[in-house]
Amino acid sequence: MKSCQCIGIEREFNAEDAENELAAYREQGPSKTTQILIDALTEQGVEGRTLLDIGGGVGAIQHALLGAGAATATAVEASTAFARAAEDQARELGRSEQVEVRHGDFVELADTVPQHDIVTLDRVICCYDDMKSLVGLSATRARKLYGVVYPRDDWWAKLVARLGNFFFWITRNPFRVFVHPEAAVQRILDQAGLERVFYKRTFIWRVAVYARKS
Ligand SMILES: C[S@@+](CC[C@H](N)C(=O)[O-])C[C@H]1O[C@@H](n2cnc3c(N)ncnc32)[C@H](O)[C@@H]1O
Image (cartoon, helix red, strand yellow):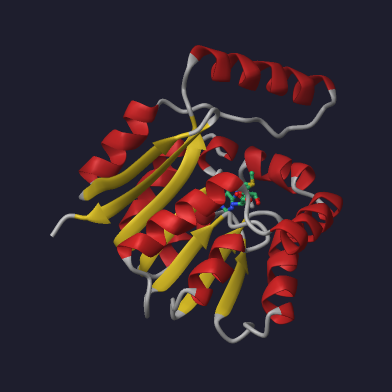
């Protein structure tokens, strides 16, 4: 992977982190915002549909939607450790046939990733510098639904991100977090022909589902 941010991603989302996340997921299930996204997608209908889960971590959305009747899931995951954890979890649940895990930066791989019925990016946009490419390219891969979780762009969220990035800088970690403007994300999805059908704000996150305009 060429991008500097992906080098940071490999360092930040490392083997120890993946092991802890997988253990937490196996014990407690999806996080609160992930569950909100899962419920909103399920409400729109996932039966028989294919899922592309970009930056899906250990695979919480993949297994929830497959459990709800989705046909297959493809994960594109930039972290080697999390790609392995997602494969482990699919094997553990006997779903290796239904789940394909690809390791790499989605923006670099986009040309080789076919369209899927549902595309999800759960807390991924904030880990990537080139939001326009990530959101723009992923939107073109969504045939029916597009689900996203990303941070609120209030002043205090930007301040927290700055403090976090200062910490990464002094610890010589190339990883950075990004609070991209909501209006810019919304504009890209609108131009891609997607219409917002679900929206919820939590203290930190925005959870939204878009449907392709007919
Ligand atoms: C904060 S974690 C969220 C993981 C999971 N979606 C969740 O909500 O628990 C962000 C994940 O996105 C992945 N990621 C970030 N940018 C990516 C990109 N351009 N392509 C693929 N994966 C990416 C990271 O490797 C990491 O696993």
